Every structure is written in structure tokens, then in C-alpha cells.
Amino acid sequence: GGEPAKNIDPKVKAICRDFSIDDDICAKLHDAMKDREDYDEDIQALHKVMERATRDGKKPLEAMLTQIRAIKSGRFPGKELLDPDIWNFVEKYNLDDRVINRLVQTLKTRRGKKKEDLKALDERLSNANQPTGLGLLVRLLEGLEETGRLPSPPRRLGGSGNFHPTGTFLHPRGGREPQRQGRGRSEDRGDKRYGDDKRYGGGGEERRYGGG
Image (cartoon, rainbow, N blue to C red; front, side, top):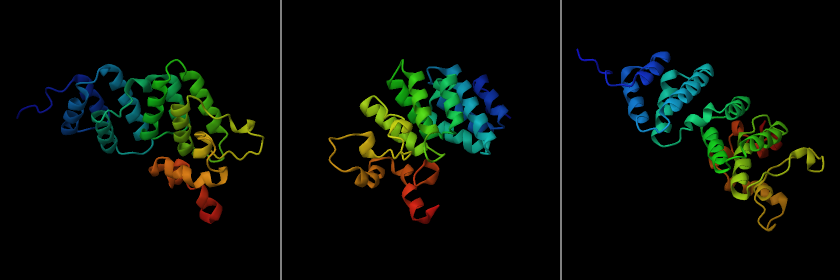
């Protein structure tokens, strides 16, 4: 019979072989990749992402399909992931694809400030009350995009140790609402998917009422 994968780029074939991806999906990856400007770097980045996903217990096929969708919709960060500073940050905080993409997009808008931004984000996340600070990170990135700067690290906030990054705190809007009421509102402002999910640092409210 004919060789269905004969027109597939050797680099795509190689990555599919490494992760035991069948020819049909391999052809889909080839199609998704063919218009990428930074082709070689993107292939390397895809390899890193796939290695990380399978190491974390994801099935290679599911992981690859997720990445193909991301590539097609322009949400694959590609060569930015080859930057050791960005990749180390991703690994340290075990960021998921959506948050990685958000991080990369924010850093892109702030060219030349990457190292200081990552250091500042690292300071705030490592001091946060909750170990899974993805929701916090998303809010910090929003603040960085909107105001061009981050709030000061928690230890400089008067030493109370209570660092609640609310909508009001991150986006001062002339102090319309007192801090207390701002807490619930910030969830509405933010990305709803992160609001109530404990993995993304949400659920702080439930925890006080015995939810965790």
C-alpha cells in the first residue's frame, strides 16, 4: 500500500516517533506546523512541552492533540519556551498551558523587562499564602498589563502577612469600593475558570467556611 506519511516533515515524524503518535495525528501536526515562522524552535519547544506533559502522567496522544489545537489557534508559545528563564519559572510553579500562554503574552508586551518581571513575580508567588498561586499569577499578570507594574511584595505590606490580591488592590480605580467588598468582586472581574477552582488558587472564600 501507499505510504500515508510520506509527505510529512522529518522533524514532525521524529517527534511523533518519540511519543508513539500515529500517522493520522502526525499528519495533523504537520498541517498545523507548516505555516509557523520559527519552525525549528517551535518543534524543540513542542518536544519540551510533550516531555513535561508525559512526565506528569498525561497520555501522549491527548497531550499532542491539545498542543495541535493550541498551534492552530495561535495559543502555542513556541520558541519563547526555549528561554531558560521562562522555562524555569514554568517548571517551578508547574504552570498549565493557559497560564503559560498568558505569561508569555504579558512578557512579550514588556520586552527588555523579562528578567526583572520574572524575579518580581517569583517573589510574590513564593510569598503567597497558598502554594498553588496560579489564580494569583493571572491577577498579577493582569495588573502588569493594565498598569505596567506589580503591587509591592507581601512582606512590605505592613507585615500582616495577609496578602489578598483583590481586584481593587491590583487595579486601583479611585477607591470606589472599600477593600472588604472588593474581595468577592475580584472573582467576577477575573477569569471565571480560575475563580472557584482550588488548583488555580481560588476557593479562598470557601476555605474560611470549612471548605478545605
